[in-house]
Picture (cartoon, one colour):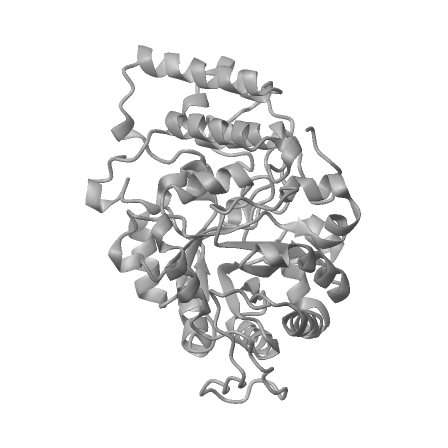
Length: 441
């Protein structure tokens, strides 16, 4: 049954006014071009402090393994995140492994305040993807196919950004057509720019929309741009996608968002229907509020990083791992503390060690108390706080494990790359990859 917030269409969309880029006919569309705006309006009451000029724009938390977990999403929603994605879910494992399923999905369904919500899946078997997506269909506002992950685990598994290049795009187009035909919620695709260039990308994106994709999220980088070689997101490419396909489906822009100034610049320049943030909002969930921006003279006027960490821990206690949806339990919590409190860990090895060894909620709260003492002793000024973990690659691009003050004695460094899908993380907090089993609950 079609969710009441969405308007079904009975007629097919006309092709955009561009040269014929593929011989196939567009599929009949289930959802109106305006479905995303309607969804945002339906839930606008959850964001009383949303700037008026952004009411119809999606401010999106990206899909990130062991990062966009339920407690984290609820925290970000307090600060104007108007749409959240689940972490990337491996479709076959979600079907076959109950323990893995519990990482991503609360056994009784997600709480009502965790909406709007899009569940993102990865895989290359259309029937497996459909079965997995059907398990959550009644509890989400859309489903998404991960075609953005650039890492080797995705290459081995035949998903992520590599799926875009299989069989000249025929495989992913067939998957989208199959899912769009059988799903009763919008099917979207998160993509990167193809290594072969913008024109090939535009041809493929049009094929995806013709096949029934109801929304595209465009990461303005290729799969070759990651880690310290990330580079700036190409908003020019995203603007071209909007120009070609924006009158048919909503387009989200992903990449290069660190504060509300960036949000507005990106929306104005690209014409996108919303922006998606990953790394910057991971470090500071109130990113979609008026703080650390020109309006505040670049001062932090929102809550300090320590308060954010405490609020997150409270949500973790409210939604504990055994109930589902919290990722890999304490591994996930340790990773979040590392990002929230990155600036406080530099030069304080005892605090750093406490984060690494936080195997219980009591120990996690102990970290917060240690930093509270540091702040009290140093007369810490929240207004001077700036992003730290987010800019670690910019500090010293020649080092693959972060800036010069990062943890030299770590044997493994994070394999997350800036603004990507964070589809596999192996670092000091433990392995938390899509092909892992149940995690440390």
